[in-house]
Picture 1 (cartoon, helix red, strand yellow):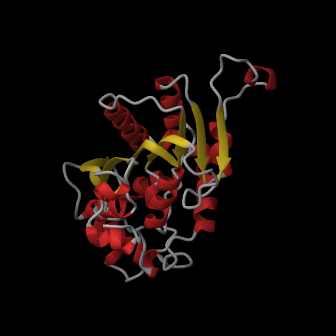
Picture 2: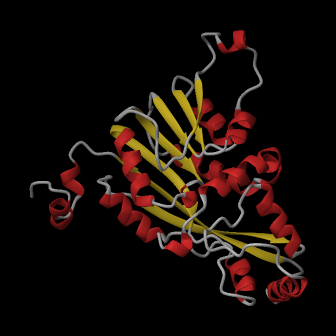
Length: 292
């Protein structure tokens, strides 16, 4: 990732910690995409024994996975401790000891550095978390490392057209980074292949939310912790004149009385194969030091 796109992980963790209490009320899009990912699992006949929810947030996806795979052990991982605390079921210690209750572990960690043993997970599920990684190449390498042979990685993330209206509005005032940057779907597919995943399946769709005003757009983004945390973001408060200019530019995009906020949603899944050489080009095998 280019330096102007690097995320400040300390600020990212703080933003999500602060948003934990308001997240569920505002995360309409996140829940919808999780539902659509779950629908895709209908076509995959696979029953993992251990499931990792990478970037689990307040646990909506974790709960869905628990219902779908009642015999599996779940691990919910998130960068923000407050999100994990929100996700934990409100049960007493003796209820958690009951044998019929599914076992879920909650781990506060960065998904770019997964604290798990090699080949210890059967399914990695990640809903709208990969866009918060600085080194996607390394993140996929970590996921490949902990996946068992024939294990599945399934994820969603945001593509480059996400919040294009907001980016356009801020571009009218200065050249600072006001909106996080997102990786193209084809580049994500290439990264999966570079990390020896079996032929990935990638697709995308546009989802447009509508708002009454710019303040509502910003309020929703703040409520889910989706602040601009790029290291080249503008520091300090923006003046009234510049803020009005942002609003005026955004207002030119109003259609049918509403302001659009576009999200390019990228979906992908890939398997960890028995023989990684079978899906690598000769050049990639050479770079990895593998025989032809």
